[in-house]
Image (cartoon, rainbow, N blue to C red):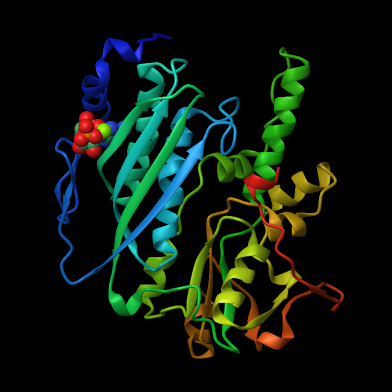
Length: 342
Ligand code: ADP
Ligand code: MG
């Protein structure tokens, strides 16, 4: 493959080259890339802002993550945070630190992934910053979104008796990561080895190309449901339940057999001698939504495609309880998926 050094373009040429394929689509974007600052116009809406920093070797491993996927994921995880407030993402800025190891073609791949995500979710790229780095690749994305003031959903609104809901399934992205890590070790021992990815496409996709639950946020709006609390599941269900319960000053009862899991994830867990329930509770990066709704909304939620009811909110004094398949109860602890703890 062709390799063009970044120095051949210079900073301004590079930014222009990477960003000129992006088209502005939102009326709230008055000015995007190209001036000292972008200009936005939000009328009658509240503005949501979220940001994420991804460092090579800490948050991603380029041995098995293609740059296009990295770009896609880096954008989508930010969109997920905006959806988790019951909002809609509209703009992003993308800042990168790049070492000499990376060529113009590499960055083109990264931006192709970012563009794919922007196109799919209707988000405009409006700016960023570019710097040389001594230690590999760093990406920071800031996402700006909008919401009606009375529709914004915080983590602190869960009330006793509310139903606890989870979208999609949990633990799949973690099992995808376990598979990639295993194949990396196999490949390290024998570079002739071909990765064994048959019938693993789903969990790999969940790890490498996650999606944000725009569909569910739109479905809830369509049905006239405003959750009482909501967040996205990036660190595992236990950790997120702990956030919602602590901030709402409530407890919860969650039923193990109600936690949605995918069959490929189950098979992978068995093969690796791991517990899929542990992966669902403590694995990371599912980017599903965890939300609570008032009991009055039961009828609207019960048949909703892609939404599972996993338990209910209790008094704070009852703590966070996981009810096992045999009716046994365990206190939920947040182990989480914390890159600082490794
Ligand atoms: P400044 O010197 O004011 O920081 P820059 O030359 O860094 O300006 O940026 C020029 C324009 O290009 C600005 O609109 C900025 O937001 C945008 N930009 C810079 N780097 C990136 C990037 N990596 N991705 C997208 N836009 C960028
Ligand atoms: Mg700059």
